[in-house]
Length: 461
Ligand code: URP
Ligand code: ZN
Ligand code: ZN
Image (cartoon, rainbow, N blue to C red):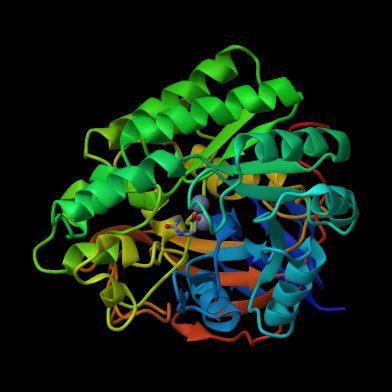
């Protein structure tokens, strides 16, 4: 048995801030206490530091095929970058092939991840073909720990489900305990606007933000919530960016519906001004839902404070500028959708603490505890308590750093936050009791991460 003791720090969880030592035996936390004279093989001095639960990023896309190319981070590079940034669990997305079975998609993604991940991982299942057979399969997947299913109201002909398919999947979700995650944008209307924009010669990246109109996010969010209500099912809106979509979620929650939503750091810190950068630079900021005018940021921070937004995930889906984003020169609709971000979520949200948008405990809640609970991983993940996995981050709240391609670990040739100064920095990371990041040194290895069978949503049982 190996024993690790973390001394002198302030343990911050979603519920408490405590000046206590943390004792770890093998892979688990066994005790928190003061003045216990514990002995250990490894002692980590956390004086002046926060001791946090490892981050849980509930929305990533390693190696995701999209628009004729594949996201640049592999499970190996992306999970290593996540670890550098204090995230110790990801929930990625397996994709059902159109015309194929959920099983086929899940097995393919399990094979991609197996033996390659630096940190623990689970999967949501993207349903790109809702039919009697895939609806039946949902129950089997829930039994195997894949307890959430993403549907798309966007991308007609590719990943899109119509309202009937959405309703059926939600009904099945209600029966099986599977949580439906919704990409809420009206893709049919957006495709009309894309066609019209291109016909007018409007080809720059900034038109991506214009055709993916805020109201088409709000409308789809409203429709998703109503369909879920009809089905008697919960719904979780992914990557929410528009204030008017947030208002739909807030209204539903006020009515007592099980409607949940996440936003992402890019919507809190970036805006349409980035999409409008000169030349083709704006393509670096093309993602869906799109970045919004800067005024939306205040509404999103408010939503995080009021719990109308419960989670911040990254939607990490990086494409290099050279050769990938460039596929859309002359036609913004061909720019692969997605941004890099898995490495910087904990730091950017800490910046939100520094700037007074959220409290320290809320930071841990939206980045660690709630995603763990939402996706059936709590209290194994998302907290520091006897019995939980010893996924722990030692965080220096006063260190400063400058985000840059030169220093990040993601396998992508640009940073959305190039030159941005951040207060706070990850100092050490433990994954199930093993130190994998130690100051400036990476001590983990690919294959350290294990597949996590997840329970059903912890807010519904
Ligand atoms: O632009 C995005 N969000 N790319 C990843 C796929 C998705 O819709 O989440
Ligand atoms: Zn999406
Ligand atoms: Zn996504």
